[in-house]
Length: 207
Image (tube, rainbow, N blue to C red):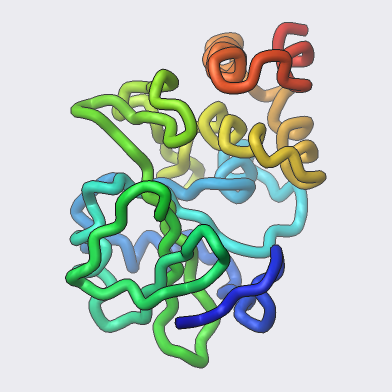
Protein backbone atom coordinates (compact mmCIF):
# COMPACT_ATOMS: atom_id res chain seq x y z
CA UNK A 1 0.00 0.00 0.00
CA UNK A 2 1.17 3.51 -0.84
CA UNK A 3 -0.30 6.31 1.24
CA UNK A 4 -1.03 9.49 -0.66
CA UNK A 5 -1.58 12.79 1.09
CA UNK A 6 -3.61 15.70 -0.24
CA UNK A 7 -3.72 17.01 -3.80
CA UNK A 8 0.02 16.71 -4.35
CA UNK A 9 0.18 13.06 -3.20
CA UNK A 10 3.25 13.69 -1.08
CA UNK A 11 6.49 12.41 -2.57
CA UNK A 12 4.63 10.18 -5.06
CA UNK A 13 3.66 13.03 -7.35
CA UNK A 14 6.38 12.48 -9.96
CA UNK A 15 5.44 12.00 -13.59
CA UNK A 16 7.24 11.34 -16.85
CA UNK A 17 7.44 14.20 -19.31
CA UNK A 18 4.48 13.74 -21.61
CA UNK A 19 5.52 12.14 -24.90
CA UNK A 20 2.53 11.33 -27.12
CA UNK A 21 4.61 9.15 -29.44
CA UNK A 22 5.92 7.07 -26.50
CA UNK A 23 2.41 6.65 -25.14
CA UNK A 24 1.09 5.62 -28.55
CA UNK A 25 3.91 3.10 -28.91
CA UNK A 26 3.23 1.57 -25.49
CA UNK A 27 -0.51 1.37 -26.23
CA UNK A 28 0.01 -0.38 -29.57
CA UNK A 29 -0.75 -3.77 -27.99
CA UNK A 30 -3.78 -2.43 -26.10
CA UNK A 31 -6.53 -3.94 -28.25
CA UNK A 32 -9.31 -1.59 -27.14
CA UNK A 33 -10.21 2.12 -27.35
CA UNK A 34 -8.18 4.66 -25.37
CA UNK A 35 -8.02 8.44 -25.32
CA UNK A 36 -5.75 11.06 -23.74
CA UNK A 37 -7.95 13.00 -21.31
CA UNK A 38 -7.80 16.04 -19.04
CA UNK A 39 -6.08 19.31 -19.83
CA UNK A 40 -3.54 17.66 -22.10
CA UNK A 41 -6.37 16.46 -24.36
CA UNK A 42 -7.62 20.03 -24.70
CA UNK A 43 -4.13 21.25 -25.60
CA UNK A 44 -3.73 18.50 -28.20
CA UNK A 45 -7.16 19.37 -29.60
CA UNK A 46 -6.29 23.08 -29.87
CA UNK A 47 -2.82 22.34 -31.18
CA UNK A 48 -0.95 24.35 -28.56
CA UNK A 49 0.00 24.23 -24.90
CA UNK A 50 -2.13 26.63 -22.90
CA UNK A 51 -0.69 25.98 -19.43
CA UNK A 52 1.70 23.78 -17.49
CA UNK A 53 0.47 20.27 -16.68
CA UNK A 54 1.49 18.05 -13.80
CA UNK A 55 0.15 14.61 -14.68
CA UNK A 56 -1.17 12.58 -17.60
CA UNK A 57 -4.71 11.14 -17.75
CA UNK A 58 -5.74 8.45 -20.22
CA UNK A 59 -9.35 7.25 -20.50
CA UNK A 60 -10.26 3.62 -21.21
CA UNK A 61 -13.45 1.62 -20.75
CA UNK A 62 -13.97 -0.23 -17.48
CA UNK A 63 -14.60 -3.50 -19.33
CA UNK A 64 -11.08 -3.33 -20.82
CA UNK A 65 -9.20 -3.71 -17.52
CA UNK A 66 -7.75 -7.08 -18.51
CA UNK A 67 -6.27 -5.51 -21.62
CA UNK A 68 -4.55 -3.00 -19.35
CA UNK A 69 -2.91 -5.79 -17.34
CA UNK A 70 -1.80 -7.57 -20.50
CA UNK A 71 -0.30 -4.42 -21.99
CA UNK A 72 1.59 -3.46 -18.82
CA UNK A 73 2.23 -6.91 -17.37
CA UNK A 74 5.84 -6.07 -16.42
CA UNK A 75 4.98 -2.67 -14.94
CA UNK A 76 3.80 -1.56 -11.52
CA UNK A 77 0.07 -0.83 -11.38
CA UNK A 78 -1.80 0.67 -8.44
CA UNK A 79 -5.42 1.74 -8.07
CA UNK A 80 -6.46 4.86 -6.20
CA UNK A 81 -8.97 4.53 -3.35
CA UNK A 82 -11.51 7.20 -2.32
CA UNK A 83 -9.47 7.86 0.86
CA UNK A 84 -6.31 8.70 -1.12
CA UNK A 85 -4.36 5.44 -0.94
CA UNK A 86 -2.72 3.50 -3.73
CA UNK A 87 -3.27 -0.25 -3.57
CA UNK A 88 -1.49 -2.85 -5.74
CA UNK A 89 -3.58 -3.58 -8.81
CA UNK A 90 -2.95 -7.23 -9.65
CA UNK A 91 -4.22 -9.20 -12.60
CA UNK A 92 -6.85 -10.97 -10.49
CA UNK A 93 -8.33 -7.63 -9.39
CA UNK A 94 -11.48 -6.23 -10.99
CA UNK A 95 -12.31 -2.63 -10.15
CA UNK A 96 -15.92 -1.56 -9.75
CA UNK A 97 -17.42 1.89 -9.12
CA UNK A 98 -16.36 4.05 -7.28
CA UNK A 99 -12.81 2.86 -8.04
CA UNK A 100 -11.74 4.27 -11.39
CA UNK A 101 -8.09 5.45 -11.34
CA UNK A 102 -5.09 3.21 -12.12
CA UNK A 103 -1.55 4.60 -11.80
CA UNK A 104 1.13 2.98 -13.97
CA UNK A 105 4.94 3.15 -13.84
CA UNK A 106 7.75 0.90 -15.14
CA UNK A 107 9.43 0.40 -11.72
CA UNK A 108 9.16 1.49 -8.09
CA UNK A 109 11.86 4.16 -8.48
CA UNK A 110 10.51 5.52 -11.77
CA UNK A 111 8.07 8.37 -12.43
CA UNK A 112 4.48 7.49 -13.31
CA UNK A 113 3.63 7.18 -16.99
CA UNK A 114 -0.02 8.13 -16.54
CA UNK A 115 -3.22 7.51 -14.65
CA UNK A 116 -5.74 5.38 -16.52
CA UNK A 117 -9.32 6.46 -15.85
CA UNK A 118 -11.95 3.74 -16.15
CA UNK A 119 -15.02 5.00 -18.01
CA UNK A 120 -18.48 3.44 -17.95
CA UNK A 121 -20.45 2.30 -20.97
CA UNK A 122 -23.57 0.34 -21.90
CA UNK A 123 -23.53 -1.39 -25.26
CA UNK A 124 -22.40 1.31 -27.70
CA UNK A 125 -23.04 4.25 -25.37
CA UNK A 126 -20.47 6.01 -23.18
CA UNK A 127 -22.08 6.71 -19.79
CA UNK A 128 -21.07 9.52 -17.45
CA UNK A 129 -20.01 8.05 -14.13
CA UNK A 130 -21.55 10.84 -12.05
CA UNK A 131 -24.93 10.71 -13.78
CA UNK A 132 -25.89 7.77 -16.05
CA UNK A 133 -28.51 9.92 -17.76
CA UNK A 134 -25.68 11.69 -19.58
CA UNK A 135 -24.54 9.60 -22.54
CA UNK A 136 -22.80 9.79 -25.88
CA UNK A 137 -22.30 7.22 -28.65
CA UNK A 138 -18.94 5.52 -28.20
CA UNK A 139 -18.13 6.33 -31.81
CA UNK A 140 -18.28 10.04 -30.90
CA UNK A 141 -16.26 9.94 -27.67
CA UNK A 142 -12.84 10.43 -29.24
CA UNK A 143 -11.07 12.20 -32.08
CA UNK A 144 -7.55 12.04 -33.44
CA UNK A 145 -5.30 14.97 -32.62
CA UNK A 146 -2.31 16.11 -34.64
CA UNK A 147 0.08 13.17 -34.93
CA UNK A 148 -2.71 10.62 -34.73
CA UNK A 149 -3.01 10.56 -30.93
CA UNK A 150 -6.56 9.66 -29.80
CA UNK A 151 -8.04 12.21 -27.40
CA UNK A 152 -11.30 12.48 -25.50
CA UNK A 153 -13.58 15.03 -27.17
CA UNK A 154 -13.44 18.46 -25.48
CA UNK A 155 -17.05 18.53 -24.32
CA UNK A 156 -16.53 15.36 -22.26
CA UNK A 157 -13.20 16.63 -20.89
CA UNK A 158 -14.91 19.86 -19.83
CA UNK A 159 -17.85 18.00 -18.28
CA UNK A 160 -15.45 16.21 -15.94
CA UNK A 161 -13.72 19.51 -15.17
CA UNK A 162 -17.01 21.30 -14.52
CA UNK A 163 -17.50 19.34 -11.31
CA UNK A 164 -14.06 20.17 -9.94
CA UNK A 165 -14.02 23.88 -10.80
CA UNK A 166 -10.44 24.45 -9.71
CA UNK A 167 -8.49 27.40 -11.02
CA UNK A 168 -6.93 25.25 -13.74
CA UNK A 169 -10.34 23.87 -14.76
CA UNK A 170 -11.69 27.38 -15.16
CA UNK A 171 -8.62 28.30 -17.21
CA UNK A 172 -9.11 25.24 -19.43
CA UNK A 173 -12.75 26.14 -20.01
CA UNK A 174 -11.90 29.72 -20.99
CA UNK A 175 -9.17 28.52 -23.37
CA UNK A 176 -11.39 25.94 -25.05
CA UNK A 177 -14.65 27.90 -25.20
CA UNK A 178 -13.86 29.97 -28.34
CA UNK A 179 -13.00 26.76 -30.22
CA UNK A 180 -16.14 24.78 -29.34
CA UNK A 181 -18.58 24.26 -32.21
CA UNK A 182 -22.29 24.96 -31.57
CA UNK A 183 -22.99 21.21 -31.34
CA UNK A 184 -20.24 20.68 -28.74
CA UNK A 185 -21.51 23.64 -26.72
CA UNK A 186 -25.07 22.32 -26.91
CA UNK A 187 -24.07 18.85 -25.69
CA UNK A 188 -22.04 20.25 -22.78
CA UNK A 189 -24.82 22.65 -21.81
CA UNK A 190 -27.40 19.86 -21.83
CA UNK A 191 -25.10 17.65 -19.74
CA UNK A 192 -24.53 20.43 -17.21
CA UNK A 193 -28.26 21.13 -16.99
CA UNK A 194 -28.79 17.43 -16.25
CA UNK A 195 -26.04 17.13 -13.64
CA UNK A 196 -25.59 20.61 -12.17
CA UNK A 197 -28.45 23.04 -12.90
CA UNK A 198 -27.39 26.71 -12.86
CA UNK A 199 -23.75 25.82 -13.33
CA UNK A 200 -21.62 28.99 -13.71
CA UNK A 201 -20.47 27.89 -17.18
CA UNK A 202 -24.02 27.61 -18.51
CA UNK A 203 -24.46 31.31 -19.27
CA UNK A 204 -21.19 31.51 -21.16
CA UNK A 205 -22.10 28.43 -23.20
CA UNK A 206 -25.43 30.01 -24.16
CA UNK A 207 -23.72 33.29 -25.03
